[in-house]
Image 1 (cartoon, rainbow, N blue to C red):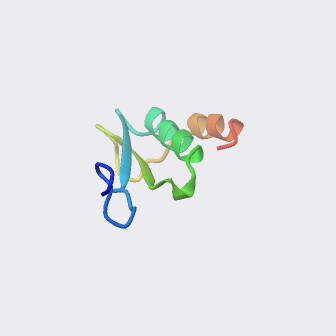
Image 2: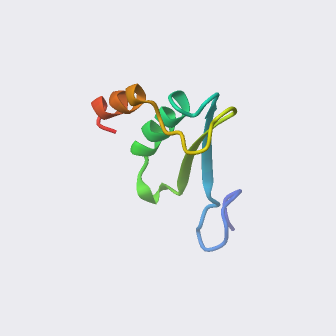
Image 3: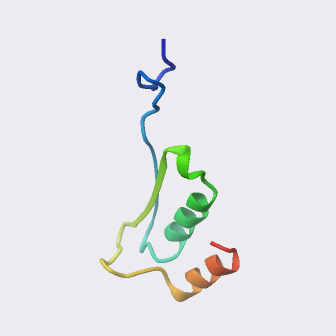
Length: 73
């Protein structure tokens, strides 16, 4: 017998988190990297970010990158 949501053989289904903000240049990418940095690579979680009005190819702002760097992420 397997636990609810568990596949036979002990494998759990993949787990996903999507952080969404407006432009995907500050809040959601920071949340993505903060959460991902605290996860064990074997956890099975995938973490991504997106923006409702994001422009393709535009990365995080310099200030968001600097804050994350200060936090060691």
